[in-house]
Amino acid sequence: MKKRWMIFISILVVIGIAAWNMYNQNQKQQKATEDILNHVQQVDEVTISNGEKSMTFKGKEATPFIESTPLVHIEKYERTDRNYFEKEPRFIVSYKVKGKTLYAVELLQLKKKLPNDRLNDFLMNEHLLVKWQGYPMMFSQHEAIQRLVDAFNAKGK
Image 1 (cartoon, helix red, strand yellow):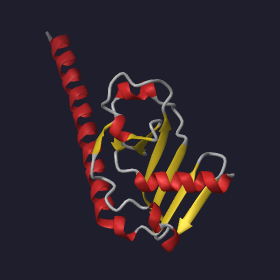
Image 2 (cartoon, rainbow, N blue to C red):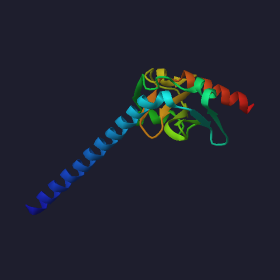
Image 3 (cartoon, helix red, strand yellow):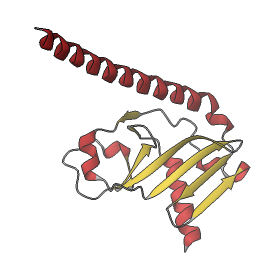
Image 4 (cartoon, rainbow, N blue to C red):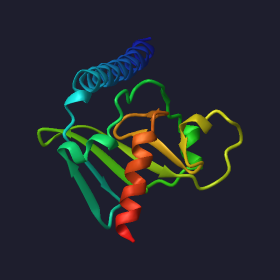
């Protein structure tokens, strides 16, 4: 009888820890979302890198590459979605306020055809997915990011 209670209590502890971790992750994401919404107008530096090289735009030079409303349409990046994209990001874009990173996004390369149209709004040029770095969220607002990638590729040639 005592062994059953110990197993039951152990299961409750594991469930409690998992629930607490989910709650903390949700709170962290909410705070990060609020920070982005409150400070996106103050972004003064944008950096894009592809692992080999990086490019930084500051002040007025960065303005065309900043989304004015980056969180208009976001959706959860599911575990099953990961199978369709490369593990390593093709580009990483960081948005900074006074030298401190406000948020960063990863551009993931599509590696195989998508089975449905659910992710099409989140694809840039039909082959890059804009994902919030550190969080399982995808962005559909990516016109400014597209301009940034184009500028990066043009200067790289």
